[in-house]
Image 1 (spheres, rainbow, N blue to C red):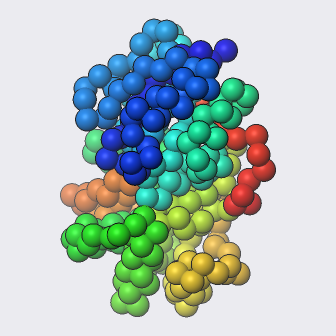
Image 2: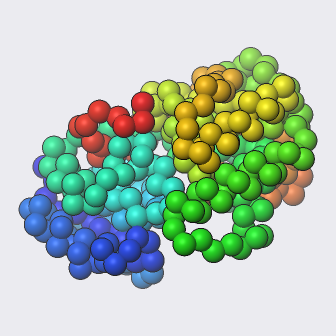
Length: 305
Protein backbone atom coordinates (compact mmCIF):
# COMPACT_ATOMS: atom_id res chain seq x y z
CA UNK A 1 0.00 0.00 0.00
CA UNK A 2 1.36 3.41 -0.98
CA UNK A 3 1.62 5.71 2.05
CA UNK A 4 4.83 7.70 1.68
CA UNK A 5 5.95 9.33 -1.58
CA UNK A 6 9.35 10.70 -2.53
CA UNK A 7 8.64 13.77 -4.67
CA UNK A 8 11.50 14.65 -7.02
CA UNK A 9 10.70 18.08 -8.42
CA UNK A 10 12.37 20.12 -11.15
CA UNK A 11 11.53 23.65 -9.91
CA UNK A 12 12.31 25.19 -13.31
CA UNK A 13 9.60 23.12 -15.04
CA UNK A 14 5.94 24.06 -15.25
CA UNK A 15 4.46 27.38 -14.12
CA UNK A 16 3.60 29.08 -10.85
CA UNK A 17 0.73 26.63 -10.39
CA UNK A 18 3.23 23.80 -10.00
CA UNK A 19 5.48 25.14 -7.25
CA UNK A 20 6.85 22.92 -4.52
CA UNK A 21 4.36 24.00 -1.86
CA UNK A 22 1.38 23.40 -4.15
CA UNK A 23 2.59 19.93 -5.20
CA UNK A 24 3.31 18.89 -1.61
CA UNK A 25 -0.14 20.09 -0.54
CA UNK A 26 -1.81 18.15 -3.37
CA UNK A 27 -0.04 14.98 -2.22
CA UNK A 28 -0.96 15.52 1.44
CA UNK A 29 -4.58 16.39 0.57
CA UNK A 30 -4.76 13.04 -1.26
CA UNK A 31 -3.71 11.28 1.95
CA UNK A 32 -0.02 10.67 1.21
CA UNK A 33 3.02 11.57 3.27
CA UNK A 34 5.59 13.46 1.20
CA UNK A 35 9.39 13.53 1.22
CA UNK A 36 10.24 16.52 -1.01
CA UNK A 37 13.48 16.93 -2.99
CA UNK A 38 14.48 19.48 -5.60
CA UNK A 39 16.61 18.35 -8.55
CA UNK A 40 18.72 21.43 -7.87
CA UNK A 41 19.90 19.82 -4.59
CA UNK A 42 21.84 16.59 -4.08
CA UNK A 43 19.25 15.04 -1.77
CA UNK A 44 16.98 13.92 -4.61
CA UNK A 45 19.39 11.09 -5.43
CA UNK A 46 18.71 9.31 -2.14
CA UNK A 47 15.56 7.26 -1.53
CA UNK A 48 14.49 7.05 2.11
CA UNK A 49 13.72 3.59 3.52
CA UNK A 50 10.10 4.44 4.33
CA UNK A 51 9.32 5.62 0.78
CA UNK A 52 6.77 3.51 -1.14
CA UNK A 53 7.00 5.22 -4.54
CA UNK A 54 8.79 8.01 -6.39
CA UNK A 55 6.83 10.87 -7.95
CA UNK A 56 8.69 12.82 -10.64
CA UNK A 57 7.46 16.36 -11.29
CA UNK A 58 9.16 17.62 -14.43
CA UNK A 59 9.77 16.78 -18.06
CA UNK A 60 11.12 13.72 -19.83
CA UNK A 61 14.71 14.63 -18.99
CA UNK A 62 13.95 14.75 -15.27
CA UNK A 63 12.15 11.40 -15.46
CA UNK A 64 15.18 9.86 -17.18
CA UNK A 65 17.51 11.12 -14.42
CA UNK A 66 15.36 9.46 -11.77
CA UNK A 67 15.07 6.22 -13.74
CA UNK A 68 18.85 6.11 -14.07
CA UNK A 69 19.20 6.28 -10.28
CA UNK A 70 16.52 3.64 -9.71
CA UNK A 71 18.19 1.24 -12.14
CA UNK A 72 21.39 1.44 -10.10
CA UNK A 73 19.66 0.18 -6.96
CA UNK A 74 20.43 -3.34 -5.75
CA UNK A 75 18.12 -6.21 -6.66
CA UNK A 76 17.53 -6.68 -2.92
CA UNK A 77 16.27 -3.10 -2.51
CA UNK A 78 12.56 -2.36 -2.38
CA UNK A 79 11.00 -1.96 -5.85
CA UNK A 80 9.81 1.65 -6.03
CA UNK A 81 7.12 2.36 -8.64
CA UNK A 82 7.35 5.67 -10.51
CA UNK A 83 4.55 8.20 -10.94
CA UNK A 84 4.90 11.08 -13.40
CA UNK A 85 3.59 14.62 -12.97
CA UNK A 86 4.00 16.15 -16.43
CA UNK A 87 5.59 19.62 -16.22
CA UNK A 88 7.88 19.54 -19.27
CA UNK A 89 7.65 20.55 -22.91
CA UNK A 90 6.92 17.30 -24.72
CA UNK A 91 6.01 15.00 -21.78
CA UNK A 92 6.29 11.94 -24.01
CA UNK A 93 6.66 9.56 -21.07
CA UNK A 94 3.58 10.92 -19.29
CA UNK A 95 1.57 10.70 -22.53
CA UNK A 96 2.61 7.07 -22.88
CA UNK A 97 0.85 6.25 -19.61
CA UNK A 98 -1.99 8.76 -20.15
CA UNK A 99 -0.75 10.88 -17.25
CA UNK A 100 -0.53 14.23 -19.04
CA UNK A 101 -3.52 15.73 -17.20
CA UNK A 102 -3.74 18.01 -14.15
CA UNK A 103 -1.33 17.06 -11.37
CA UNK A 104 -4.09 16.86 -8.75
CA UNK A 105 -6.05 14.37 -10.88
CA UNK A 106 -2.96 12.23 -11.50
CA UNK A 107 -2.05 12.18 -7.80
CA UNK A 108 -5.54 10.95 -6.86
CA UNK A 109 -5.24 8.19 -9.50
CA UNK A 110 -2.29 6.75 -7.56
CA UNK A 111 -4.70 5.57 -4.87
CA UNK A 112 -5.80 2.87 -7.34
CA UNK A 113 -2.20 1.57 -7.35
CA UNK A 114 -2.40 0.31 -10.92
CA UNK A 115 1.18 -0.71 -11.66
CA UNK A 116 2.64 -1.61 -15.04
CA UNK A 117 5.97 -3.36 -15.46
CA UNK A 118 7.91 -1.69 -18.25
CA UNK A 119 11.02 -2.48 -20.28
CA UNK A 120 14.24 -0.64 -20.95
CA UNK A 121 16.82 -0.96 -23.71
CA UNK A 122 20.30 -2.05 -22.69
CA UNK A 123 22.94 -0.38 -24.87
CA UNK A 124 26.49 -1.40 -25.77
CA UNK A 125 29.22 0.57 -27.57
CA UNK A 126 27.99 4.13 -26.84
CA UNK A 127 30.24 5.85 -24.28
CA UNK A 128 28.47 6.81 -21.02
CA UNK A 129 25.12 5.43 -22.25
CA UNK A 130 24.02 2.05 -20.96
CA UNK A 131 20.24 2.26 -21.30
CA UNK A 132 17.33 4.08 -22.90
CA UNK A 133 13.68 4.26 -21.94
CA UNK A 134 11.98 6.21 -24.76
CA UNK A 135 14.02 5.38 -27.83
CA UNK A 136 17.40 5.29 -29.52
CA UNK A 137 18.09 6.19 -33.11
CA UNK A 138 20.19 7.48 -35.97
CA UNK A 139 19.46 9.82 -38.82
CA UNK A 140 17.47 13.01 -39.04
CA UNK A 141 16.34 13.18 -35.41
CA UNK A 142 19.77 13.47 -33.71
CA UNK A 143 20.68 15.94 -36.48
CA UNK A 144 17.57 17.97 -35.54
CA UNK A 145 18.67 17.94 -31.88
CA UNK A 146 22.06 19.36 -32.92
CA UNK A 147 20.47 22.09 -35.04
CA UNK A 148 17.98 23.09 -32.33
CA UNK A 149 20.78 23.39 -29.78
CA UNK A 150 22.92 25.42 -32.20
CA UNK A 151 20.05 27.80 -33.01
CA UNK A 152 19.40 28.46 -29.33
CA UNK A 153 15.93 29.84 -30.02
CA UNK A 154 13.62 30.90 -27.20
CA UNK A 155 9.91 30.16 -27.39
CA UNK A 156 6.95 31.67 -25.55
CA UNK A 157 5.30 28.34 -24.79
CA UNK A 158 5.91 24.56 -24.95
CA UNK A 159 3.46 24.39 -27.87
CA UNK A 160 5.50 26.91 -29.86
CA UNK A 161 8.70 25.01 -29.09
CA UNK A 162 7.22 21.75 -30.38
CA UNK A 163 6.00 23.47 -33.55
CA UNK A 164 9.41 25.08 -33.98
CA UNK A 165 11.09 21.67 -33.83
CA UNK A 166 8.74 20.27 -36.47
CA UNK A 167 9.35 23.26 -38.76
CA UNK A 168 13.10 22.80 -38.47
CA UNK A 169 12.81 19.05 -39.11
CA UNK A 170 10.81 19.74 -42.29
CA UNK A 171 13.50 22.20 -43.44
CA UNK A 172 16.31 19.75 -42.68
CA UNK A 173 14.58 16.96 -44.59
CA UNK A 174 14.61 18.98 -47.82
CA UNK A 175 18.40 18.64 -48.09
CA UNK A 176 19.14 15.66 -45.83
CA UNK A 177 20.55 12.65 -47.69
CA UNK A 178 19.50 9.14 -46.64
CA UNK A 179 22.32 7.08 -45.16
CA UNK A 180 23.29 3.45 -45.49
CA UNK A 181 22.52 1.45 -42.38
CA UNK A 182 23.48 -2.08 -41.46
CA UNK A 183 20.55 -3.30 -39.40
CA UNK A 184 20.07 -6.73 -37.87
CA UNK A 185 16.95 -7.55 -35.85
CA UNK A 186 16.84 -10.86 -33.97
CA UNK A 187 19.34 -12.33 -36.42
CA UNK A 188 17.62 -11.14 -39.62
CA UNK A 189 19.21 -8.58 -41.93
CA UNK A 190 17.11 -5.46 -42.67
CA UNK A 191 19.88 -3.20 -44.01
CA UNK A 192 19.17 -0.37 -46.44
CA UNK A 193 19.22 3.39 -46.96
CA UNK A 194 17.13 5.38 -44.51
CA UNK A 195 16.39 8.92 -43.37
CA UNK A 196 15.71 7.61 -39.91
CA UNK A 197 16.09 4.41 -37.89
CA UNK A 198 14.46 4.55 -34.46
CA UNK A 199 14.34 1.77 -31.88
CA UNK A 200 11.22 2.75 -29.94
CA UNK A 201 10.10 1.62 -26.49
CA UNK A 202 7.23 4.14 -26.29
CA UNK A 203 4.89 5.68 -28.87
CA UNK A 204 6.40 9.17 -29.09
CA UNK A 205 9.68 10.80 -29.94
CA UNK A 206 10.92 14.38 -29.62
CA UNK A 207 8.26 16.97 -30.51
CA UNK A 208 5.33 14.63 -29.73
CA UNK A 209 5.80 12.69 -32.97
CA UNK A 210 3.84 9.46 -32.66
CA UNK A 211 6.07 7.18 -34.72
CA UNK A 212 5.02 3.92 -33.05
CA UNK A 213 1.28 4.05 -32.19
CA UNK A 214 1.26 0.34 -31.33
CA UNK A 215 4.28 0.44 -29.03
CA UNK A 216 3.76 -1.09 -25.60
CA UNK A 217 6.68 -0.42 -23.23
CA UNK A 218 5.79 -3.56 -21.29
CA UNK A 219 5.55 -6.18 -24.04
CA UNK A 220 9.20 -7.27 -23.97
CA UNK A 221 9.87 -6.05 -27.52
CA UNK A 222 10.90 -2.88 -29.33
CA UNK A 223 9.25 -1.22 -32.31
CA UNK A 224 11.91 -0.48 -34.92
CA UNK A 225 10.67 2.40 -37.06
CA UNK A 226 12.25 2.91 -40.50
CA UNK A 227 11.89 5.82 -42.91
CA UNK A 228 13.37 4.48 -46.16
CA UNK A 229 14.82 6.44 -49.05
CA UNK A 230 11.61 6.08 -51.10
CA UNK A 231 9.40 7.66 -48.42
CA UNK A 232 10.84 11.18 -48.31
CA UNK A 233 7.65 12.88 -49.53
CA UNK A 234 5.42 10.81 -47.25
CA UNK A 235 7.61 11.67 -44.29
CA UNK A 236 7.56 15.38 -45.20
CA UNK A 237 3.75 15.31 -45.35
CA UNK A 238 3.66 13.56 -42.00
CA UNK A 239 5.71 16.37 -40.44
CA UNK A 240 3.42 18.98 -42.02
CA UNK A 241 0.38 17.22 -40.60
CA UNK A 242 1.88 17.64 -37.13
CA UNK A 243 2.29 21.35 -37.76
CA UNK A 244 -1.36 21.62 -38.77
CA UNK A 245 -2.62 19.36 -35.96
CA UNK A 246 -4.09 17.08 -38.61
CA UNK A 247 -4.20 13.30 -38.91
CA UNK A 248 -1.89 11.82 -41.51
CA UNK A 249 -2.32 8.43 -43.14
CA UNK A 250 1.40 7.71 -43.41
CA UNK A 251 2.32 4.51 -41.57
CA UNK A 252 5.98 3.90 -40.99
CA UNK A 253 7.70 0.68 -41.92
CA UNK A 254 7.84 -0.89 -38.48
CA UNK A 255 9.40 -4.13 -37.24
CA UNK A 256 9.45 -5.74 -33.81
CA UNK A 257 12.46 -7.22 -32.08
CA UNK A 258 14.39 -7.91 -28.89
CA UNK A 259 18.02 -7.85 -30.04
CA UNK A 260 19.21 -5.21 -32.51
CA UNK A 261 22.56 -4.38 -34.08
CA UNK A 262 22.89 -1.04 -35.92
CA UNK A 263 25.84 0.42 -37.77
CA UNK A 264 24.94 3.76 -39.33
CA UNK A 265 26.89 5.67 -41.97
CA UNK A 266 27.49 8.52 -39.57
CA UNK A 267 28.41 9.31 -35.99
CA UNK A 268 25.42 11.11 -34.46
CA UNK A 269 23.00 9.10 -32.36
CA UNK A 270 20.47 9.91 -29.66
CA UNK A 271 19.41 7.97 -26.58
CA UNK A 272 16.14 9.44 -25.29
CA UNK A 273 16.71 13.23 -25.21
CA UNK A 274 20.51 13.01 -25.19
CA UNK A 275 22.40 13.57 -28.46
CA UNK A 276 25.79 11.82 -28.70
CA UNK A 277 28.62 12.36 -31.19
CA UNK A 278 30.55 9.10 -31.62
CA UNK A 279 34.25 9.23 -32.48
CA UNK A 280 33.74 6.94 -35.47
CA UNK A 281 31.13 4.80 -37.19
CA UNK A 282 30.19 2.21 -34.56
CA UNK A 283 28.10 -0.94 -34.37
CA UNK A 284 25.63 -0.29 -31.56
CA UNK A 285 24.05 -3.30 -29.89
CA UNK A 286 20.69 -3.11 -28.13
CA UNK A 287 18.83 -5.68 -26.07
CA UNK A 288 15.53 -5.44 -24.24
CA UNK A 289 15.41 -5.90 -20.46
CA UNK A 290 11.81 -6.79 -19.77
CA UNK A 291 10.00 -5.48 -16.70
CA UNK A 292 12.99 -3.53 -15.39
CA UNK A 293 10.86 -0.69 -13.98
CA UNK A 294 7.41 -0.24 -12.46
CA UNK A 295 5.16 2.70 -13.35
CA UNK A 296 1.87 3.84 -11.86
CA UNK A 297 -0.50 4.22 -14.80
CA UNK A 298 -3.99 5.50 -15.49
CA UNK A 299 -7.16 3.42 -15.32
CA UNK A 300 -8.71 5.56 -18.06
CA UNK A 301 -8.75 4.53 -21.73
CA UNK A 302 -5.84 5.81 -23.80
CA UNK A 303 -6.46 9.22 -25.39
CA UNK A 304 -3.89 8.59 -28.09
CA UNK A 305 -4.72 5.11 -29.28
